[in-house]
Image (cartoon, rainbow, N blue to C red; front, side):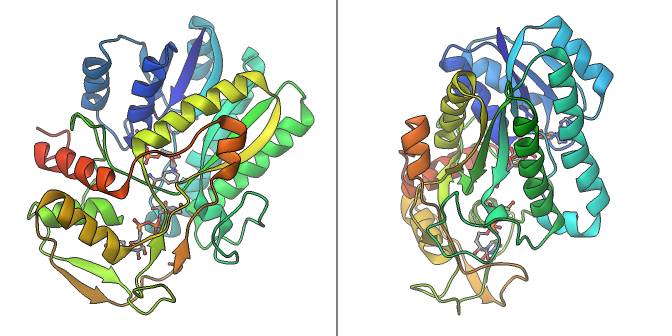
Length: 338
Ligand code: NAD
Ligand code: UFG
């Protein structure tokens, strides 16, 4: 029996492949390389010392998926495949609905047909929108999203809920990630964004290495201790370990559960920049710029449901996250394009 990992070549997927292999699971990986490179999985194999089947396949390709399910005994799916750039989703919403929502519907149809009815899905804290106060708990209202990307996550959560209601054999663990950063401790795999990064940590790392001249801190007038935005940064390896626990849970239960994966600790932009400088002995020049449209001041999790249901807790510190992000960036200044 094996676990199918869609989008397994990406940032979170590649780290999860390693943790799944280490936990003793057999895996089968698919990806269409839209936002990733074959080198990532080559390094996963190198780090884990294990081989596993890979298929270049799009989750919207029902026939391609069926062949993969027919060739392997798949007992559950970890579903990472999706587009994730917030700004791009506002410009090309139909592409996001087609890929993320349409792709997930196709995947679920094939899974049902092939008798595999257990999924761990990558959702996001973005579904909490701007109407709730942190710490965010899973029972808070969702859906007040501000962009098409967020709406695809909200819609997919609803689809999985309806699917589980319609068929008592289905199991869906919906993981709401907070802000994943960091990299594998080896420095061999990490986040490899295309072009100029949108997210804080890859931007900070590229400033530190001199690829970008300075960081723009988007707003210092939020209602937070130092005025800059507060987020719940979580080490990608902790996040990956959460997926192993979520698969265990999905194999043992039916129905749908939404579960936060965060640390429960808020960290401001300036705290993160200072932690990065201290951990790595590098400079990160910055200027304060206007707020970024759509941003909220504070977003952090209540992670207690994950502890209760999955027996999982984040273990790594912000210092670990900064050190590991920098090791990846400094050892791979061009990402996987060496
Ligand atoms: P990523 O872009 O690195 O990985 C996603 C992978 O999916 C890529 O390798 C891409 O090529 C693949 N993919 C995309 N569309 C596909 C398709 N139609 N068929 C097959 N493969 C396809 O992103 P990530 O940061 O690893 O995120 C993984 C998942 O977690 C995504 O669904 C994302 O929305 C979600 N998520 C990410 C964050 C974050 O901050 N990184 C936060 C919350 C949720
Ligand atoms: N920030 C800066 N300068 C930058 C980039 C970011 O000051 O160049 C600030 C932002 O204003 C925010 C914080 O750093 O206060 C974090 O920003 P990110 O872009 O790294 O992350 P977000 O919290 O905005 O968004 C992330 C993911 C989204 C996801 C959301 C909620 O990128 O996909 O978390 O889960 F929807």
